[in-house]
Image (cartoon, rainbow, N blue to C red):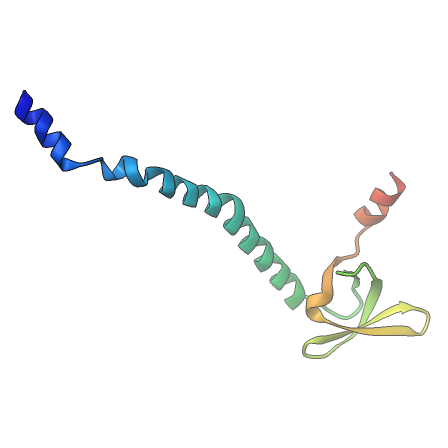
Amino acid sequence: MNNLFIFFLQAGPNPLIQYGPLVLIFLVFYFFILRPQTQKAKKQEEFVKALEKGKDVVTTSGMLGKITKIDENVVTLEVGQKSYIRVTKGAISRELTAEIFEKKEG
């Protein structure tokens, strides 16, 4: 009995118990922070690739406009009658939908 007790004392702490909390923290960090962020970036990239002329969009700064021209990385938006601005594709946040207006009214 004493020999068994001495063996476990010499073996040291169990690596699973010693490194388990660190592995658990990494998994929580991955599933709650890294994974959702990469999924969101992927959706935004797909949205930017699918931009086409005539869509109503919102820029990251909150400007509303209709796409009139798309060059490689530059998009021309009509923001008023005969008023145009040029922004990069990355500056376009989302498509302008009815739900944006519903949120304002409610």
